[in-house]
Length: 478
Ligand code: CS2
Image (tube, rainbow, N blue to C red; front, top):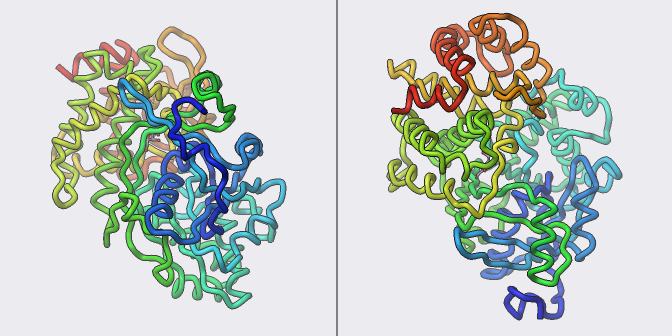
């Protein structure tokens, strides 16, 4: 028998439920999260909710999953134990650049009731500081005139167009990315793009479409080759696409689906709510905000993972300082204690089995900072509260974007604005000049916020550039 797996999971294959969901952006996160909920929902309550995954860029995930006929191992890593499950919920994986038509046809099939997405912040091709679709984005420019799209909004709109023409209802768009009011945001972008293509399509989508917002949460580091080798040695299963994640998982979903058609998510442990805003704000600001703060400062100080960072007492104090700055700006969801939530986050970050690299979280900061940190800073300034910890986080992002670490080693900065960031950091010999150049990046900082941030950020950045991240934190997190 395959070691570590319950006997029934390696048993003969059962017939699979038909597909009811197309998922765009089949990365490790959705396989560790949404796929598991859908598998559990079907196990509890049935339904044809098999998933067709779509990779919008590379064939790697498809090629890796194909080898086990779309099954993969999901490994739950607790601090001192692990649990392995074989997840069988995918029915196929398509690679959009190879055959965009096949993706559109799958999305236009009336048996598909939901199109879910984890395409990361930048996958929406929007302006992070305003939330509006960026019509100048090259992928959107392409999709405006080409019936075979390349962007996620393009696929949504073209597939909705096919459904409208065929006389079908739209699918529900279920976004699972860490964006504020993510459903509303994607709705606005879809309507904006649809309007450019055909105003009747926009009107039809506005009336019939549904875009529930969701709050998703499970820490899922990228899978490494060492993980793959280890799990193969342990289970005897050669799986090229296993996922590794923490035990914690939380999904709050607005219960607003076309014709009410959805898996029994609640049976799988999801919270079905009427308004997810409070959950989303809490999670984006308290979890993702501190994650980004620890990622930039931790990386600069030479820490490889979040667990390594938080094990350093200076950074443990920093995390506590950050939560104390963030909590006054967050309205707790009903029945939730923010102090308990912060304690639970501290314990989750400390899990040594989760090797979540600071470098991974540091990616795409220009797309993440507005909803993770800048909204809190805006609220705190309006209320007259100072935020030295959060200012240090933004300054650390700027310092990181300069492209070399504190030891002078090059940093592989992955960000759609990487060039602009490097230019901003190199633009002036003074730290105040660098900060001013960063604050002029309108995709990140709206003009009014930029003005008010110049002074506190300069103060934080001067300390950071002069003293290094660890010492600068020691000075504010006493
Ligand atoms: C992280 C998130 O990579 C990142 O930016 O902050 O992916 C985080 O791990 C998840 O949102 C946790 O639910």
